[in-house]
Length: 94
Image (tube, rainbow, N blue to C red):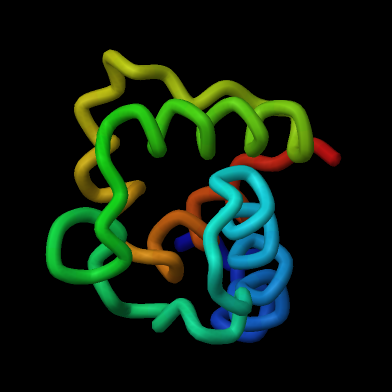
């Protein structure tokens, strides 16, 4: 993490990113129900590759940067809500 990316910055952005995921995927749950450190795939939130494409699209529209499907860091970026939020906080232009 860069010096400007504090844990408080990520913590403050978590609810916004959780809401973005819930709305983008029409999940029948409250954003606060997404555990920040639970996996987004499989046993955690249960997202699949199509869901990730949807999330990547809304993230790019909302925050002004591209999440590329060929990025070898995607497993790390989409590991959890906290990991995705930290990546957004570090990359966003909006």
